Image 1 (cartoon, rainbow over the protein chains, first blue to last red):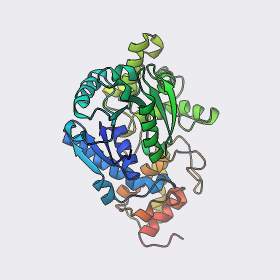
Image 2: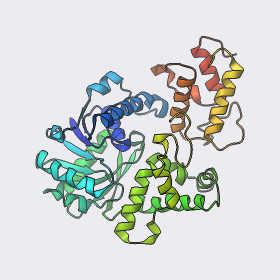
Image 3: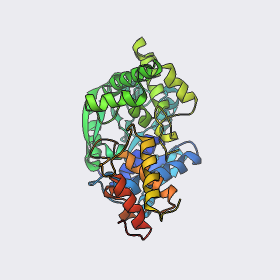
Image 4: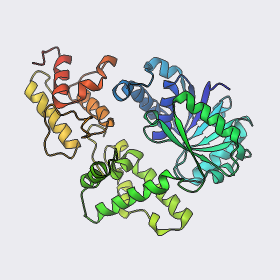
Length: 287
Length: 87
């Protein structure tokens, strides 16, 4: 099976990154979100990503803005993904948002089409239960910036078939991505662990133990991490981190996942990280 | 912002970099990316700042990490774009 056109549901940070990755590799995308404003922002983000590729990668394909535009269709009508070969869903990390999307998607997409659920924490088995094709649903935890990350955490739901995993791996082969396949539990491997780091780093900052710069520097200079936990949270988006912590807290009923009040306060203040120009750190030039 | 004064350009870029990263000072030739002072995403931030501050439009050939790898390299790039020798 060739991947000619992929449906991308949700055109936020990650969704725009997915579309960037697809168009860079010659695959067309039908991009769906709920408003023209969001779609316009997504189109601008994709074009900027495509433009900046030479700055950030020596190996990714170079694509002109004209070619990128030809490979993208932006729409608010979910029906438009009916002819797509595969669907990647990236809508808001909220079960009450995702569930009706999957119910509608299940009616629109041909029976054989597979769904890649790009979620931070919500179990894939739960997502698959909203469809009549649980064997065709697989979890894909793409990281930011999607087109620059060569490895993806892939999650097998309870019913995910080998054929669905194979289909996904073939798509990733086109995108030059490697998959690490894990089993299904809330938060999987990456976020179940990383969100504890990010949340506790926020508590350390809240308790005035260290500055945000010091906290991140310790992770980078002492542990050799590429980014510190607060920078990582800023890159993901503090609203997404907060929602993921809430899902983990609800799922495990374990107080270790309670969201730090400072993190919640920043979200309510509109300081969501890099995407708003300020989070735990300031990002001059990105406001 | 004028793109005619090399010292003014360097000062403006240095202030921007120092306002973005947690270091007290910056060597003019320090490689920002190889030294781990910033991650590669900072290149986009720096490029966007240069475009806005110096009212420049970057062409495809300009988007080379070599142009933004250090304070001196970025200053020289701005001067070159303005048609002035970087000295």
